[in-house]
Image 1 (cartoon, rainbow over the protein chains, first blue to last red):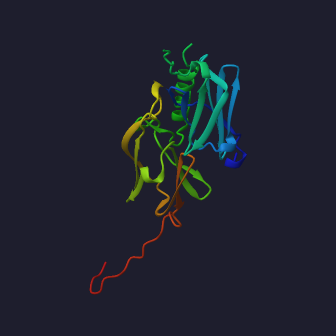
Image 2: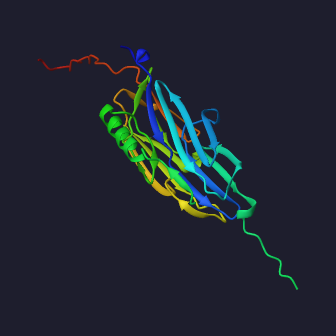
Length: 107
Length: 148
């Protein structure tokens, strides 16, 4: 069997990530080397965030996946993502009521 | 509720993948935490030998490639600070390292014909195949004034 006739090889991989918390948002940095913007999908279902990516090199098809459970303080309507140099940066804003706020002192 | 990162199959899948790739003698994979997590190697693609290394987050300034005789050396530096104003909840990516990894060139690779490219955190290094690698006959010259 020649190399061109060999079946596609599928590889399932997890995504190494860093997670940070700020006063107004959460931040996820995820390594997805070789995955272009077109090969990347980020879905939010309820309080579950699912990051998936795929890349094809020759007959090798690599699928990346990682699932996150967002805390109650996360505003699931305010999720933004950018990708650069194989690193995906996902920012999840916090709900207004969970952000710190200054209390005015009367009198 | 705290921020949850669910990955129940993480350890099993990773261990299986590493064993699988070791068994198949596959080419190198991620560079993380200061090490190539799997032994790098070349694969033949058409008339070229190709090495791919995952270097997510690195730019060309962070990488240095050199060829000496029959070896290729890759040096990589990464240093990432936590974003300002954020506290760390979880760290898995290689945050800081400065490493060098050397790999032998395939016997048929031409060390003088090398190209490298970096895209989306994937470094691709490619060598052309040497035009003549087969056996060749050496002419034996006669030396004046001597007999066999």
